[in-house]
Each structure stands twice: as structure tokens, then as C-alpha cells.
Length: 469
Image 1: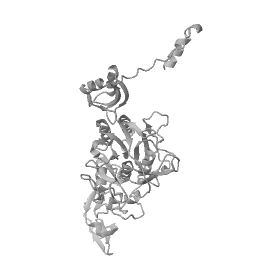
Image 2: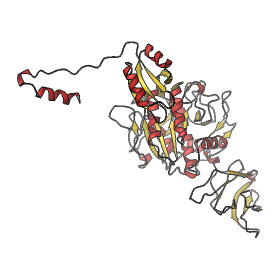
Image 3: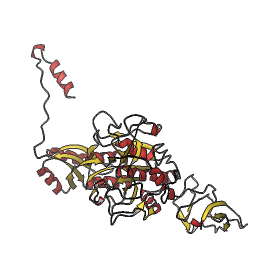
Image 4: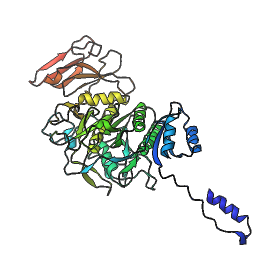
């Protein structure tokens, strides 16, 4: 715009008087200026508040209005202190750097571990569903969409990095993470759709404001009713605004899994790992030991494989690399959440998180740090519905049955729309049964019954009650 105005002005003068003028340089910020995140009070008009900040001499960068209400600014210490005292401002905090949580190591084994309860490994990976129909937002360094691991399942994304690369990946971390979430070879949810949200540069670095901006974009572009998950394999110091943005994503119906961190300290001291509503994931190795680098503590929800994890990498469309970190642990849980949502799209983030925590294998991490929940992700314990459909609840709609590896039988009520409601426990003790062999009216009372076989080959009839129990 400035160039166009200057051209018009020069054209209006006689040719001899046309003297080139230099563009007015930007005034550099004062020496004590720093980057800050400003959270506006509830109900604030973001555009008006941003204009007010500019009128006070504060340099305003991005503004946020979907996941949170606020702005990223450059201000002096005195300006930041004044903002913190304003009744229209909820909080002011430094816009701290963030980084990825990975290190280099060899050897794949992880998918095999998360579909069974105990070692040794079975040599197979059999998830209860593929994650089809679920959007997986990968908030990271971008994704190499052309990689063969993804089979055209990478949707248009967004970038906070102004380097002309869009949401593609020049670091590799995001592609590796996306491969664990939904790669066709290395992934948990092999048919989920990946949405890259690039908040880290080619060196794997960014700022808290970039994360907030990415999450703000996710909420503003997530279509209501579409099952979705978000993976954040990154973090930094404690940040109120980042925490609020993650909660905003979950309030929009998106299940969020986050890396616990790689400093070997309490995860409750960093963001977004400390967000109670999110699924915070620590790292374990192939011997079911807590990884030496993994953060831990009461903010952790469960462990997942994070040592020697092979997945896609950005160096070519067929390349793979083996990496370690809680960055690699979190996407196992993200993929598992997508598996659940593929079968039960209406499940809330709280229900998905509770399901993954309750079906995780307890007590197998041999050196779990004190205060850390000793639970290892077990996607194999997420029940797969019994293939025969019957009206077990007496409402005229077909329901499904499932049995988990702990021996609990579950009913999934039909809704008549092709989807199923949240599961209801029918009873326990079913771990002695090797299969549910049939379902139908076996007793002649007009109600569906069950026929099950135990490990000794004996068949048992369980008369139906018509109320799902």
C-alpha cells in the first residue's frame, strides 16, 4: 500500500522534481521490551482491546478469540506491569520459548506393546477400529503431506511460521508424530485424517503465542459434531494462556493428548502438561520401565511407549527414523483416542480420557516415579463390539456387546442412527470366557440371550432380561 501511494505522489510532480524517497523505517522497540501474552477479561471485545493496547504504544502481534481471548504483544516491563493492573486484563505472562520433546535412539516395538496387557510381545497389532472419520490435529512442526505413510489423508492445515513453507515440515518432528498417530505402517489409528497445525520452525522452536494461535485456529475451524483429537508433543514453562487454550479446545469437543516432557522432573511445572483435563502422557521403554528422561508426577495420566520409536520422517516421501521422547509417547494416546471416537463419535473428551485411563494396564511400569499413576496405555483393552446386533435394552433399537481383557462385559446402546451410545457395564467375571458364541432368543421368552464358551469348552446360556443386563 505504501508503494502504491508513493507512486501516485511522484507521478503528480514534474519529472525533474521526482526525487526517490526511502521507506520510513520501523521504530525499534525499547531495549527493555519483551514478548508477553495478555489474557483479556471474560466477554472482552478482542478487536477493541487490541486497539486500546496499540493506542498505549504496545506492539500487538496475533490476537486470539476462539480457544481463548487475548493477544501476543511486545511491551516494556513498565507497560506489562500497567497492563497487569488493568481491570480489562485477566493476566499478563511472558511469551516463553517452546520446544519439541525428542532424542535420537534405535528400534521399533511400540505398536505391539499397546494392544496387549503384559510382556512378552505377541508379534501382532490389532486395534479395535481404524480411526476412520476422525480428524487428528497435529500441533507441531508441520507434516510432509506427500509421505506414503499417509496415503492422501492429510487435510489442509495452518501455519504460525512466516517462512513461506505453509504447513509442510522442514524439521521432521511433526511428520514423525503424525506417523505414530495415523501412519498406515507406524500408526495407531491408520485411517484417521491428519490436519497439520504448524507452530514450530525448522529448528523445532517456537513461542507460547504460536501454540495459542494454533489452538485458536483449531477451534475456529473445527466443524461441530466432527469427532476430533489434538496432539501436542511440545511444551515449555507453565503458562496460564496455553493452559486456557487447551481447555478451550477440549470445550469444543476435541480430545487433547500432550507430552509430559523430557526433563525428568514433575510434569505439573510445565504447560500444557499440567492441564488436568488433557491426557498427559509419560514415556516407557520396551521393558516396561519409565524412560530416564520422562517427566512424571500427579499430572501424568498414563504411560505409553516413548523409547526407540520408528515412524515417518520428512527427508523423503518414504523415509523413516527412530526417535525417543515423550513426544513419541503422546501420539500413541492420541491415536487410541481416535480409535474410540471412530466407534463412538459422540463421546466427550472427558469420556475418552476416562476410557483410556480405565482400560490402561495397571502396575506394570517397574520403576514409576512416586506419585505417578502406574498405568500403561492398552488399546487392546478398549472393547471391540460383538458382531451380532440385538435389542438388549428393550427399546426397539439394535445394541452391541463387547468384552474387555479384564473380563467385563459391556452393552453399547443403539441410537437408531448408525451410531452407539456410551457403554454400560453388564457384569464382570467374563475373563473365564474365551468367546461369545451367539446372541438370540435361546429360551423362548422373546428376549435376546447370550451363549458363551469358557476355556474348558463348556457352553453357557445367559438369559436376557430386556433391560440390557
